[in-house]
Image (cartoon, rainbow, N blue to C red):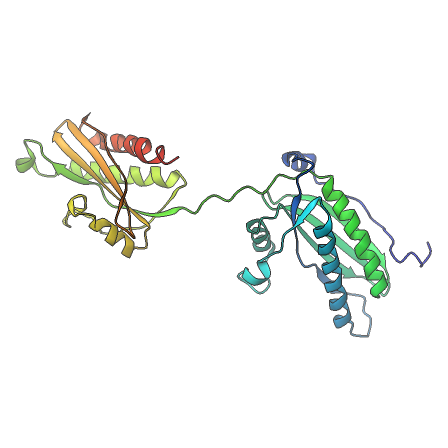
Length: 326
């Protein structure tokens, strides 16, 4: 084959990984531009040539990347997304997972990565992959080889690689990047408290079974709120523990305590015992910055002893906090 053809495709095989991966990427509208981030390619020279060509290779690689990004940016089938990883990734040489996460956060559906390897004086390889930022699946992979190591050879290689890559991606349906879930609210859930107005309150006081019922109720509410995906539980330590002033009757002092713990919101719950088998459960949710009540509710009179408090509290929080805020 003539050396005039400085670009020679030895392997132009698209490895569209297993059909399951492609099938999982359900199609989008043909008119919808795919958001693409193009990572800087790496370069390695194992040709063994005596001359130090590092500076020339770096310059050609930078020109290669600029041209590739420019062609993605001017192709109406794609929306070029500038990667923030170079400025914001934690390490000087971020790993693949960090780069993929950064591309997703920047709004890219696809991250293009690559490596160019100089094998000998005249032969270089370029291996490229396109990765879906939502699933992490490789949706397109190609291996090219080109001959020559001068400006013209690199320019012809870039033009061919760009055309093949964009054509391959245009034929590969890609889901839009899922919208990131909102950050969880930092929530301090203080231990539920007992307000006993039953006839036996003065004589019986708070029993060990009452303490167990309150602890189970607190744990149940923390679990249901954490599992909702909306809240991040903040450790309250001994705040609100038995022996401390009652938080349900301190005019919002819980918000100040929770703010000091790093929480954005605070929740105080109370079991008001009417009789040994009747109770009312209530809660208040406050913004820790302003102290304002965001949500509050009580269950109305419920039947059951202390073993049933957690069940009543879970239902109240689900009905009047989680469902009301959907």
